[in-house]
Amino acid sequence: MENPSGVFIAADHAGVHLKEAVIEKLKTMNIAVEDLGPNSVDRVDYPDFADKVCQSICDDNHFGVLICGSGQGMAMRANKYSHIRAALCWNEESAVLARGHNNANVLCVGARMLDEKLVMNIVESFFTTPFEGGRHQGRVEKISLPASL
Image 1 (cartoon, one colour):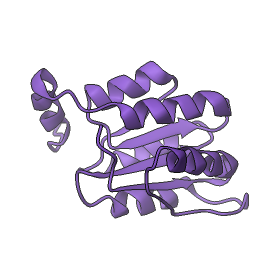
Image 2 (image 1 turned 120 degrees about the horizontal axis):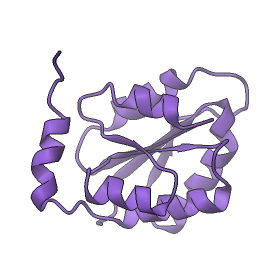
Image 3 (image 1 turned 90 degrees about the vertical axis):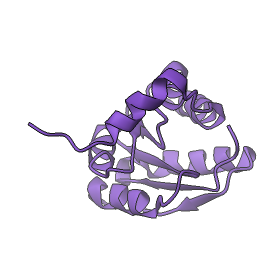
């Protein structure tokens, strides 16, 4: 995968420390990263920080990383945006498939669920895996369509 032009990262209070480690990992991969907060462990609402990241992603070469306690809340909020394909990843394989098959543009992880070493491996897998296109392209296009009852 070609280096993204920008990665926007945010967390809630549960993910602040892991966010710092992910930022350092991205820098070692020569990926530009913008920290959208928070910078303390004071209680915050994760949807507010998911919004900051999702609203910053404005082209196909921008990506996001969202970290909260479980990763679930961030993923749920991020996927409310039509241009976002947020994936909650729990191991390297889930990250590879999220990128390769689903063209995920936001990585979500749970700070209380995974140890730091595993998260670093997930980050590397996510940001080094290109979208395969082909048979997956039409499916990804369907993901972006509005849902109806």
